[in-house]
Length: 162
Image (cartoon, rainbow, N blue to C red):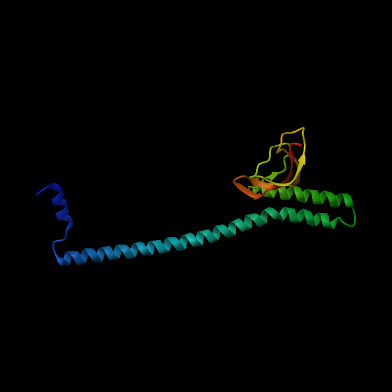
């Protein structure tokens, strides 16, 4: 008898009782694997829920200093206009910083070439002093990076005069 035939013979049960025993063991293993998979799904779902709650808390925490600055500015509306404006500027800077910390840096560069991944064209102006497609003005800042864009910058670009 060849070696592979001997190995195959070892794998085959000798009696129907052995076959039943092996089948029962396989069923037990199958049921255990299903239970493990179900437990894994439940753990993953709980972990995902906990991570979502933690992320919402981080995002809300990032906005607390902005609200504080706005409240301070609003408290100054009746007494000092300059203090009010400084408070609004501080809240704006904190908002920009919070978005940057969350992975969405402010994009408002001019003089660069239009990039459809970062910009939304609002207007085109004939301009001969710069290459066509140069961002001349940012009407509304964008936030993020090409692979993670929250909002594109709304821009005015140049076009070659006709």
